[in-house]
Length: 218
Ligand code: DC
Image 1 (tube, helix red, strand yellow):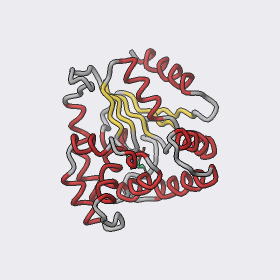
Image 2 (cartoon, helix red, strand yellow):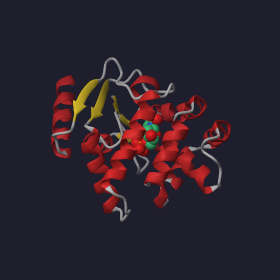
Image 3 (cartoon, rainbow, N blue to C red):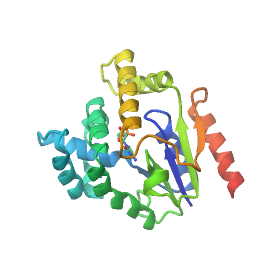
Image 4 (tube, protein in one colour):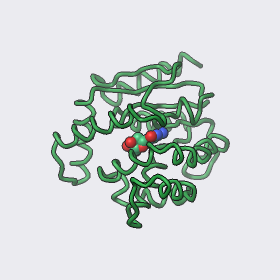
């Protein structure tokens, strides 16, 4: 079974995807990592993320293992690289260069210990529309921008990053605007996606709600 989870940043996609993958013994692909990897590699080598052709070259050379090793760096999940990722993700050429790597994952899904998984959970924008339109279940997980900014702020503070709530809210809104307005993979649910609003639910409640939906399907 292939499950895709799309939605805006900090709506709880990642938490839900990881909980489901653990509970079901499925492999997990956080697809935002491909854009974060390109953004971070460019930043570390002093390249300008505003240059689409440069970003495309980095995207073409990215491998799964290089992505995993870049993800170990502390800046990978930081706000600056979130912006880099959002910028490079807006280029159609970059998305095209990174598509096959994301699709290949479902052909041979593996758990972290190398064993074969029975299914895959894809987490990320466009996973239900472009990466895996054939998915068995498509979820669009969302929440208000204020609730998402509060969650992201807490996450940053937990990692020792000094940033105000107002700054995080501005960042969430500007990323939403950029991600919704762009021509390449705009932030939009697949026609056959189920919308899950997590504004008033905690992580466990979201997990239970979606687990019930999956049980119904089987
Ligand atoms: O989920 P995240 O914050 O790690 O994602 C980083 C950026 O990449 C974010 O701006 C959305 C974008 N992204 C995308 O365009 N398509 C995906 N499938 C996943 C993420």
